[in-house]
Length: 235
Image 1 (cartoon, rainbow, N blue to C red):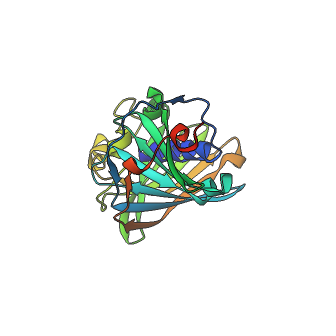
Image 2 (cartoon, rainbow, N blue to C red):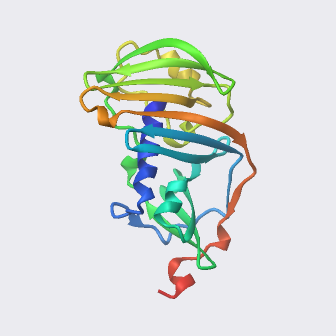
């Protein structure tokens, strides 16, 4: 369900904040589309014991890719402006950077498992809870729980964008108490607006994710303006 997708996305991004791409292979020969266009910005705040992090995700209706940036990415590389795109169709992450007056792109190929949800949902108990309104959107509440974790989350279908077209919806290993009709309702445009993750054994892992804004935008990346590191700097 959506919480697992958001958790994977957030952890994946946090991994890239430190620019540790050792697990992924370069994909320099992959041909990018001429443009990546976006029409919504989904703002997400993650609150953790070690501090808060904010992410801006860029979405487009029906697109099998999304973009993101974060102030944390700038902290890791203050001399560069960075914007990243995860493209499911191409199976890559493209890191668009502006540094030293140059525009460069670094492409890394994702493993197939990076886009798959391998969670065994059958080990979870699933229940529906009271709904609530977040940022003006009516959201249904759900709890997914097992012996180790409890995840409370709220999803709305009142928005035109979703991560589902990128990550897909896993219909296998349906958890106890889960009504398949809930999944069908959110297949096209379900978006998580809040999630509370509780680790029953290690409280230091507890975190909350909240959507703090969903704004329209006409932002786009013209990929033809970005060259490779080698061509830009002669490395």
